[in-house]
Amino acid sequence: MNNARQWSWNDLWIFGALIAAALLAFWSAWIDIYLQASKRTDNGYIFLVPFVAAYLVWLRRSRVRFVRKRPSLTAVPVLFGAVALAWWGEQSDTRAAIHLGAILALVSCTIALAGREVVRQFFPAFLALLFLIPVPGEFRRWLATPLQSLAVGVTQEVLDVIGVATERAGNSIQISGRSIFVGEACDGMRMVFALVLTFFAFVFSVPLRTHARIALLAASPFIAIVCNVVRLVPTALAYAYASSHDAEYFHDIAGWLMLPLAIAMLFGLIRFMRWLDLPVFTWRFLQA
Image 1: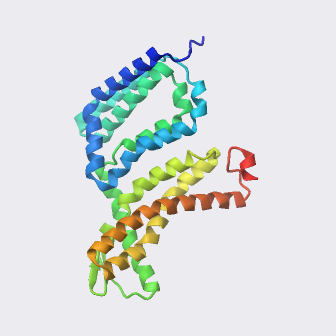
Image 2 (image 1 turned 45 degrees about the horizontal axis):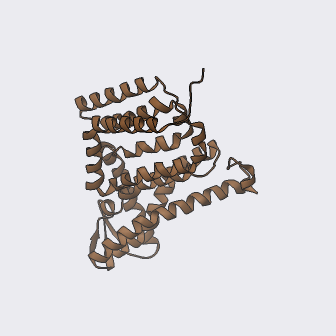
Image 3 (image 1 turned 180 degrees about the horizontal axis):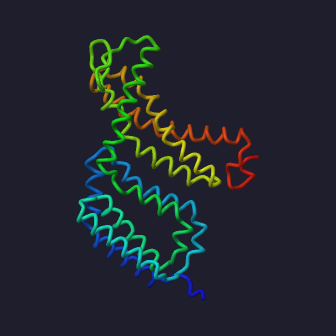
């Protein structure tokens, strides 16, 4: 039996009250997310997540007509899972579990009134909320080590090819007697998660077939590496021959330029897939 009906103002007030209650219940988790996003530059992308989620909802705004008031008991196990994750996170000092519990609590409020259909219709937007979880320090350190080694090795190889004399010492490269700590300065950690969020938003904002989305997401780590490599050489030269202030400024600008470069590479990959006559878009006429 279908008990779904149109939304009323009372329903919206109830929904707002549930969201407020969920936020208050997990207030410490949301404060921790905010502090980690504001204090660490490589977590700054977290402030963009609500806008990405809203953008993905706006792109699917025509699906709102399928969302009715359809209370579902599925919200109960989701809320129970949120509380269990938060409890386990507190006991084991696992912040990611606490943050995930806070997000699931919000999702349970939505399911409680709109049912599971709202998650199905706007699944990419709900999935984007996972980017609100700050990356654990252990994973960050595990990822930083190979990125630093790659940054130093590739930079030195390219500089040697173009005729710039270099000497490597650990994670630093010496150019004209100046030591440039490429491993720490240019390992890409400041932008890698922002790039992943950019890839996610792009893939789910274009009407792609499922296999095309999977292929683009699978290629995104390699695209991120290529983007970082592209900025390594000029950044190293800037640190070697320019003032420290100018080099830092160039480093920051080059980091943000990785985002449009990554989008351009994704478009290029889509064009390559179309050139291979692979079905890429959901609507065939887009490939005409």
